[in-house]
Amino acid sequence: MEKSRITLTMSESGAGRRGRWRSGEESRRRILDAARARFTSHGYDIVTVRSIAADAGVDPAMIHYFFGSKDKLFAAALEGPVSPRGPLDDLLAEGLDGAAARIVRGFLAAFDEAGMGPLALLRSGQPPEMVREYVEREFTTRLASHLQGPDTALRAQLITAQLLGLALARYGLRLPGPATASPEDLVTWYAPLIQPLLDTP
Amino acid sequence: MEKSRITLTMSESGAGRRGRWRSGEESRRRILDAARARFTSHGYDIVTVRSIAADAGVDPAMIHYFFGSKDKLFAAALEGPVSPRGPLDDLLAEGLDGAAARIVRGFLAAFDEAGMGPLALLRSGQPPEMVREYVEREFTTRLASHLQGPDTALRAQLITAQLLGLALARYGLRLPGPATASPEDLVTWYAPLIQPLLDTP
DNA sequence: CCGGCTTCTTCAACAGCGATGGAGAAAAGT
DNA sequence: ACTTTTCTCCATCGCTGTTGAAGAAGCCGG
Image (cartoon, rainbow over all chains, first blue to last red; front, top):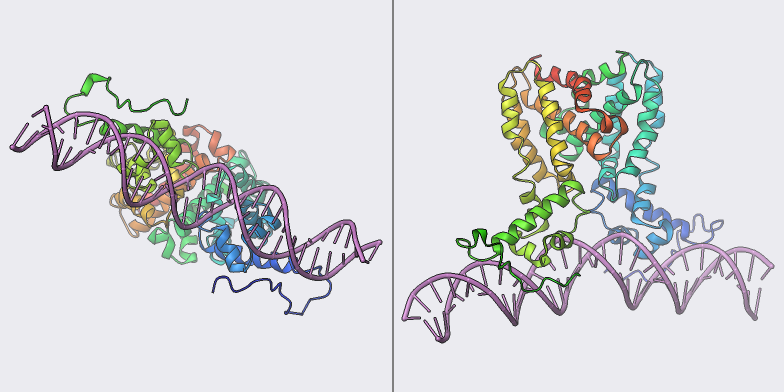
């Protein structure tokens, strides 16, 4: 059953046959889909390049041909579907009153939709510079730009810490309380702990 | 330089020669020391069994002879030096007024001393059941037993989430603010966000 | 003193991992 | 028909954690 698919190179699925060069686009998409599925449900190091290749019906070497490395594939897989920029700006555009509740609510909704994929970021190999850059660029600095008063950067980063901890407890460690509570309950409990950092001290 | 030490088997260091059978105890201790040094300064998956063995001047197979697996060595290495039970009980014995400040202060002190070792727990292979059990047994339930009012378990777990987030931001991601701020500054900022969960609502 | 015993140590090997380089096939361009 | 570009597969590398078996090294009952 394993070695069945040999040299078929799609052939059928004639929908968009014309236009693209050959099957490269298709293979790339299938790899990306398989990677997304695996990475968002299991941790970074548990998922193997070879398993993704098997899911996509593709040779493991092709993953390096298209993406260069496991890290870059991970980055590519987590790039599209999870981008907190737009939603965060929308949330903050409504003003800072009660923004903590909206942030926690949106944050939980995003994670509930995307699985623990974003958390797998924390386990993606390497020193954490890449992750820190991502978090700062996509979240912390944008949040800080909406704050007023002193220490906006530090306050935004502490908010990030709080949200990170909540996500880790709920989706990573699965502490029974945070893991089973409804999003609204968590908003009720947790938002008041964040709001003070949003308000100008 | 690598293959220099062959069949020396301690011989000297005659301090405690009598009593122990042979050099097993010594090797075990050296492995544990090397493991602690590596695990507390780098992440779990970055550290290799072979590197620990090289540090300890020992064959990699001995690690499995003494400890069985990398996971168990990790657990053994992180067992003794990091145990939040005693300090936490002492902190809470002084009452809940201002306990958040004392908890944050003690938490940061413990991490500053132990390096990011405890955080490496989060990256130690496997599903998170083992880690969750450890965190609950050593921290969350003991904290909850000191709380009063409703939802003590959930409140204790949310405090755990906040501390986890702070540690992750400071020692894991190294967000510039939390990473460079002094412990007392972090206490000033963060403790007021935790105290509400300690107080009876 | 000597075999047997337990304990420690080493060596060689295994399967699996991410990654690489080169050969081959097949469409596109000329 | 040819070259070029793109895609695919295969064999292989060095590394990882882990295992099994064989070899030294102390101890103990005869």
